[in-house]
Image 1 (spheres, helix red, strand yellow):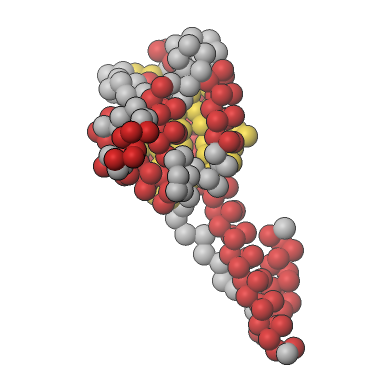
Image 2 (cartoon, rainbow, N blue to C red):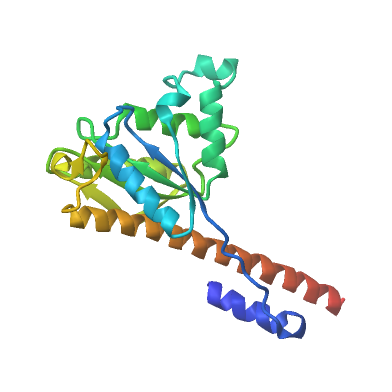
Length: 231
């Protein structure tokens, strides 16, 4: 679609010139579904976030614990959004994409992550709508958070988000991270590669989306100008 629009813009543009497209720096927020200070999922999230930064994105890893977000309560919402909730919603709304780290509790997503999703989805604007999302998860078990991420994918699709087909599942995470240095171990080769690939893929897809949007806007403008000239 983008290639077709580019050809149309070039054909109808003044002097046959195709508009210059700017990829810019995608803006990404990264959110961990665990509040625990020693969260292995936070370590994995930071690794993917750093890969996205290296690929040219601006990435902010949100400190959900510091935001002091209460459990969703309609009575609280009716009195006015708490400051931390408003900050959360604003940052997600302003982002081009989101990295979500999803621990697995009892075969599904954590209450922390679900609460974040619920607050950010409330009217008048669902902050998740249209967002491109990359997911990852780590667990000491053997499932690699597959069950939790299946649920997460379903939840986010209901928000109008677009979840990357590629996800990262890390099992036996206690053997893959160094809790002293809070980094992935050097011999966790596959995990390091998968997280790097996820961060880079999210940035790549966000850039492609921006280019497509610019092509479409330029094509629409050229079409309008052509119609006025015919009149």
